[in-house]
Image (cartoon, rainbow, N blue to C red; front, side, top):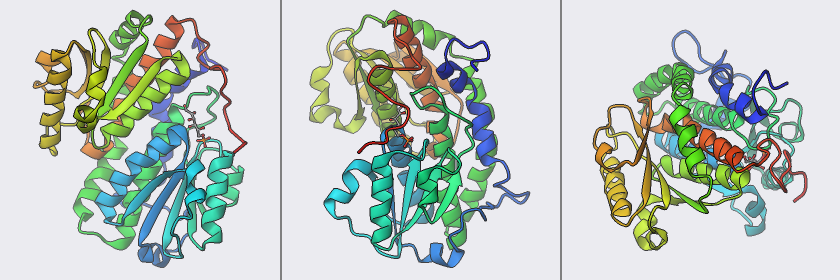
Length: 369
Ligand code: F6R
């Protein structure tokens, strides 16, 4: 039941801190090491993996795009991410040393199922990241890491996405751990940060009133653009997908570096553009480039909606609307930066009179190819 929330989607957005914590539960030991015995792929097999291929659809695909950064950074194993519906039609190169990761909330998505069957026929090992116990995708995989989001009822995926991200980070860190990479110290630090990430998501949820107000004020717009870089790019894609499916608006996510190669021509007076800004610490080059992008689009009339880390003062002069998220390690930022975009889409759709739990033309699990 909705527990007093106006929609399942709002309830599920609010459940995210717990969903994230539940997905970590029992998977990190007292010394900060990962315990993933449930992943029944032996360590010696994982040590031989020379390529990771992620297949998924929709929101789960966006989780996969983010996972690629984490896997390649912590393990230095090349990682590809592919839409499950495209995967088998291009005769992908797979063998016993390929680890295929299939991400699916429902565990019943036909495109993802067909992709994993194809991968296993080629001899690859398949690890499922799934939210539904005993569903088809985990049953047909070599191993499964369950997300513990609890049942997701709203058609638009929210808490499942955050837990898919957590599961992806766990897989990336675990691969790093069993292979003993040079990133051991960083891995330990990130595991610590992950343990407190539920609290960070909670803090974001407590500050969403201005986001709701902003969303209502944009209800009569036709287009919203989303920009990001690095892991913020898939966050931008996810923000755009949420807005399309719930508000039925034209919404597009771009890699901010691509702006100058075409999309900047779309910018016109009062066009809302959401920009996901990376942390000014760490990859500060990217941060500064994003700040320049914000200036460029604002000079052309865009209404800038900026998602930036607490304490990032450089964005302040160029943000028509500023949404703050807690300081997190670069790779974990999607866990906090996605939440305002979910709230934004949900509120905007409601303001347009749409039924957020049951968007038109969509089904919760897509069991046809
Ligand atoms: C978006 C959404 C869909 C699903 C996609 C995959 O909000 O819900 O894009 O993410 O259909 O579904 P699963 O994860 O069940 O395989």
